[in-house]
Length: 525
Ligand code: GLY
Image 1 (cartoon, rainbow, N blue to C red):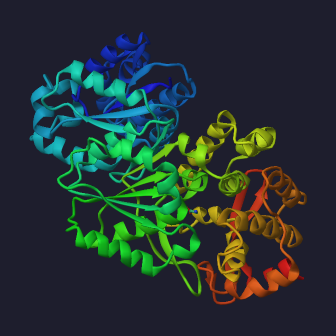
Image 2 (cartoon, helix red, strand yellow):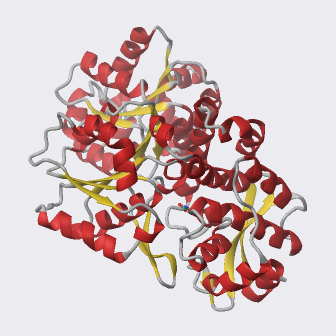
Image 3 (cartoon, rainbow, N blue to C red):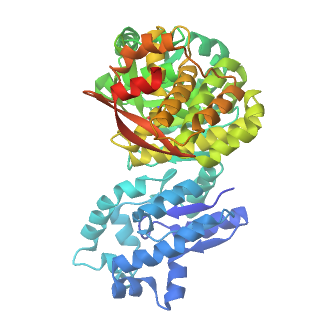
């Protein structure tokens, strides 16, 4: 079990609940404020008042960052403002289960016994000050794995909720109050039941495809059985494959939702792979200007890439994903059991996105892929789980820092400029998206090597991994020439240049603006 961090405003019960949780688990409790006080030889209130907030946060940073490097199970009670330090907050989310305890400003002021020990509330109106600070910190407290209200609950009840959260394997996408969990499970439909219950939707619209419905329908039925929604879920099963990723299919989802009397409290469940997730997410983003969406990834590609990060779209005759929206889901559920029925070709296609993210962002993941490629290709779940987890973690770091792709998120498009062109040229009929990404990655890497931007040998290293994973890596000059016009409608194009993700070292990349003609010569010759 990873460490548990209890966060939240002062007087939300961190130092009462923390020892209770620790005792139930038989692990230690540490309180960062107590450690700071001990080191400074004075109470933290006095230290804060004496040195000011800036110096106090520096002390907290030097204490807490190294603490989070220690993976041993502990409950760590943070100070009320510790999570205002971004580096601490992000690291805590990566290394621990972070639970924010919440209470209203009125409750907090009533709970604080003496103001002199709480310099942050020591104003003419402590209530106003608490309200202001809560509003200022709303987003940073929102960035957690779970929020637990302490209003009307006993410490034991709160501890129960913390324990339940800590028993799950969840990765948090920190986006302020839009933060959501990517939960990893193993054959447990009840996790979807719990997620839906938490959202308390007025109605549910399930979007899936006929293949997923046939292979995974029983899992979905088990999850939905017993759910108490005012009306039974409506289900749309579209034809599988990229050919369905059209405005006509989006329209069909809109029609079904509107016929079912959708309202703002409805939830769309995307139950499938990348195509289903992108379409259902886009429909959710536009229905009534946005209803909540839960992504249940059933393909490996959806698990590691498309279900996480909020990109939604459909294809246009001019190219793939040309119309869409950034719209974050309310939750993502990755149940590894879905991989048991996923055809090997689809599994390999998803792995292409794992290789891609490793090439630009995660050298340790690249090494893991090289070490375990054979077991991964064979579908060994014990080998697949850590690479899926690491790929999601890497993607979370990218999206967290550049949600709307104004910078580094474009690195995730490695292989997609050439890959999308090949897919679009073939009418989405012969290559799966992941296969096109594998081919596109090798071709783009070879081109940027020729342009002197990528270290020599990178494309052959990538090619070797893709080949071990049973992925295609080549396209003929004739295919590339015929597909090239689709590069010109790439979203990343501006006049005669194009922004291209470039691998600059093992597990590192940069987005470079290249002349399209120079790129064409490097790709096609
Ligand atoms: N699939 C690339 C991204 O989410 O940015």
